[in-house]
Amino acid sequence: MTEAAQKHPIFLKPGHNAGDLVESYKWKILREEPRLVEIDAHLPEHLLNPRKQLFGGFTGTYVDMISIYTARSLFTDVDEYRWAATVNMRIDYFAPVVGPRFLLRGETINDGRTTCMIATHFTDLEDNKLVYAITTLRKQ
Image 1: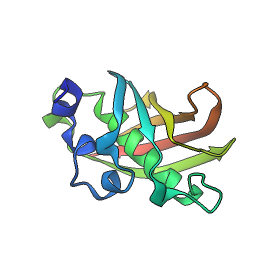
Image 2: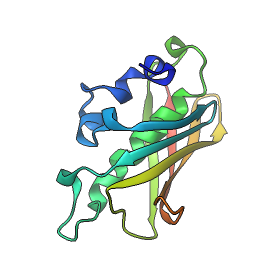
Image 3: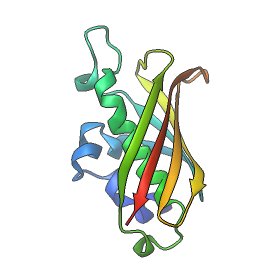
Image 4: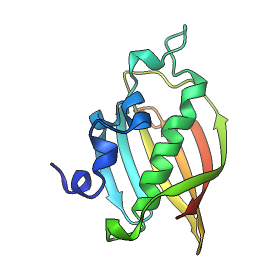
């Protein structure tokens, strides 16, 4: 198990409803440091629309997972960070997300006392922008 998986096992093993939906246990962590995470993700067939693209309604699940994962990166001790509640999410779609793989990047825009703001970027393997989202999380 990687160091990241030891720190954040909920995202990298079965047993989390949203994580299981997007099959996050199959994600590859490319980079993880305070305020930033980068993931190589795959596009499960059960999330495709009839055009074989990520169905837009599932995009928010990816955004939420990456936002929470990025917020957790702000803490060196996992026990310091219990959970976060998503209080706002805005998603902008630039191009369809198609598989088999794509990249996700979460970065902290602002880390306040009770909330944090996270940007999530979806890109294809050629670094074309597909989706951009901003999420505000209330830290608990």
